[in-house]
Image (cartoon, rainbow, N blue to C red; front, top):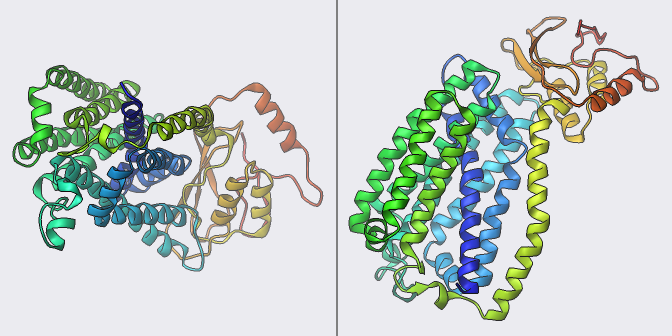
Length: 458
């Protein structure tokens, strides 16, 4: 195995990680768009709470793959950037729009907060739907071998050179497959995120089972179209020595995921779904090996000089020492975030008094959570029915606060208590018991419209 092979493998590992993590974020947007039923708002809240802490970090894997590609395999990067500049540009626009829309949707506000946030939510969902289709179409164009002939495309003219490679039945079928796979991953992951809320978990369980069946249909469609449009990958997936073991492992992972979902074993379903999608991706990689871009650009032919590859491999090793522990810490912190800091899921439809805002901000630990608290409590009134806010404090149960339009107080209902270390709770209680200068202690989560705060029984 050469340095070029090792770095090509690292690129694909990064793409695999992006599919499992960033792809699930895209799938969450799909389910946000398709949210229906009496719990549709709570479904959207769960999706946003699951995506919020990690969606930016998940793009690290895509950035890593792109940087390694143009550094280690510049001819392949140049050909992709030229012949597939249309779908890749649209993917970039979709990623930017999706991230911006998510930020304005969850943390925005203003004079017309509710209406504007609904628009941002719709843009987030639509971008989450279109971007995976284009990513999959790009993969289909690569697998089909229509980016060869020295980079001149498939024929003369603009359409034949820059459009025909990714706008054909096979590439679009791969795009559909990617979309369904991401939606399947998201639904499986969300069953575990909804643990403790049985009805919500059941909603996503049904969606995961339906998406799993749809993923099988999409895979069969791609394989059938590959017989005509992707002969190199077709031969690898059918006739290679590794083909049968790979198909058996993939089938076993798929069945395990569906059975685990059926019996409500959420953690096993998550692991099996991730293995299933990973094996499918590696089947594509092995099917076109040793080509970076079939049918004529191999890994060895596209590789940069050996000195460059050695330096890049050393940089990747050093970067992994920083990146992997950081991502691990992020995921652990994300698990504790729903308990350690307030998580406001919806925005009040009535403005709160300054005293209520000050009280909430005083007891909100992190800067980002303070901003969300201020945005929610200060949101202008646009009318509407009662609004539910989900709040979790370090040492209290997660609480649902319901505030009716025109009411002077709220009613709180405990949902579930999440365990915390005693030392953390003790420090939080000591801090909560110490009044700030110029302020009076009050239960921080709710207040009357006239600015006076009320306590509830714990």
